[in-house]
Image (cartoon, rainbow, N blue to C red):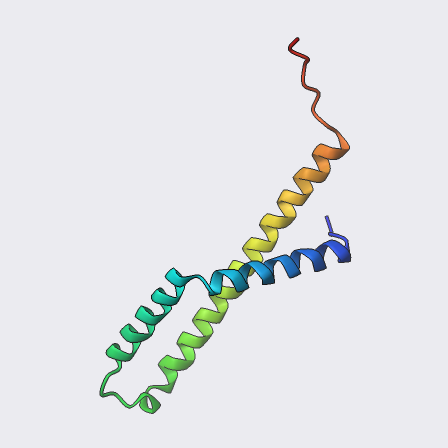
Length: 98
């Protein structure tokens, strides 16, 4: 099922707003700082220009994971939207409990 372009655009805008908010969260700032420090410590005293292969791999690895996560998220949105549209199109009758 293809989502209408207006819905895809609205979902993308929402994703960008949510991600922007997440990136500003104090606990994530702390985690990024700790990650950066750990990375710097791991390569302390090492000339990183001598290990471009590792740096290239790491960049590609993280990018690949980000793309995978984005696809998983978008598929989850599509599945959720499809479920909502299906339920709205053919609502489940709930017996009246009076």
